[in-house]
Image 1: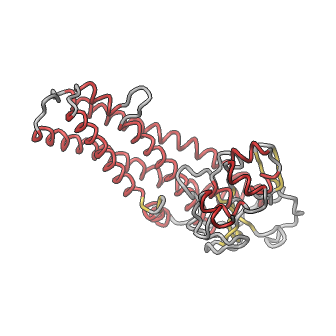
Image 2 (image 1 turned 30 degrees about the vertical axis):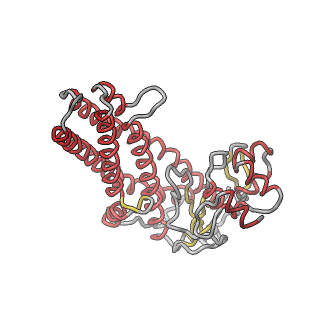
Image 3 (image 1 turned 60 degrees about the horizontal axis):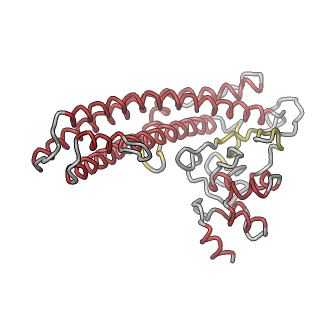
Length: 348
């Protein structure tokens, strides 16, 4: 196994630990959301909501909004603290992986603490800072809560029935169910974003050792179209494409709940002055070891028609098997997914 491939293995192993870290943060967020739910229900329980006047309803909703805003402020503060720590750990792990694999001290530099703090505050989670997303989710939850209460009052429902709208009932998610899932997605994507940005900051600090990054996408039927297309795509540390026409677009995560990671492209042992032969690279897949240079499309060719249909969708899989489209054609050149209708219009 080459030095580069060994570093990749450590990065991917760390990505699995990130999932465990993410689960821990989600539990803390879940606790804060449960407390918010209890406060909202307690507030509803103090009133007889039948035949409720508009004025009293507005007071109730304003007080409820305060509960929601305060709860989301706590979630945002918790996440900011966790992300600052994660940025430092991610950068250090990237440094250790380089030194551990080479077996020598190579003088790898870490981004400064100030740089990492700035990275966390400036990191864009799907186009907006983390704090802005928590504020937006607070507004969304407040709107859905108000809507549920107003509809219940308008239809003459009991307080218990209105509470059911908030917490959910069998076969029908409530306000809090939706808010919880949105919060979990934000936690996951925030974690992946900051970890990726911290690693990239480390790579840039060590451009004399690291030449660029390659995206490694999870190879299974749940992989999104965008990550199938980007799998194996390589970019310079400045985000310039090396072996693809797709744009870097800030790198991974490329969508909510993205599972892809970026691994470093190191200089060869010879380029770094280390006397060791370069070995063929391998990478893991659900079918065992595959060649390290294999792209998702090559991997897909080894699968059954049924697997291909599940991964791509039957219509798109058929176009791909007929040679009318390639995996990269599932995306336009802005990196956005194309629908089956758009593909058929383009390729007939």
